[in-house]
Length: 127
Image 1 (cartoon, rainbow, N blue to C red):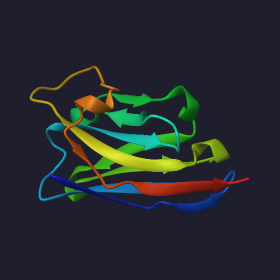
Image 2 (image 1 turned 45 degrees about the horizontal axis):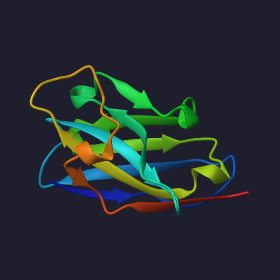
Image 3 (image 1 turned 120 degrees about the vertical axis):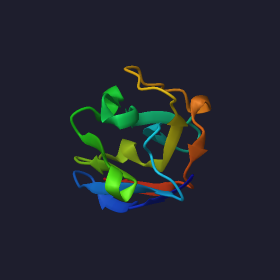
Image 4 (image 1 turned 90 degrees about the vertical axis):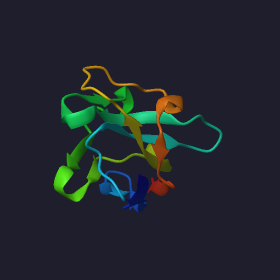
């Protein structure tokens, strides 16, 4: 599957953005999905994730209460709604998918375990 992200941009602090990740040529039906971000000079790290079928969600402490991950199976699209954005949220955001043969109640936060990645979309939050 090819992942195509959209929705990044420039926003003022306190504003909102919604990122989209569409699975081209496939679906997310057998995958855990996640959003990661990477700021200059920092490692790529998970922001939010969702297990196969949406049974469990995960959020990094820094975004809890502000970001929401969701999916639309009919559109083969995963979303990241980002509210109350802060300058420290500035980064390139990537969506990723990890194949899961079975449903699971644990979510992997390690980028190395993900099989497919989008090209990344820049999010810049000005103060």
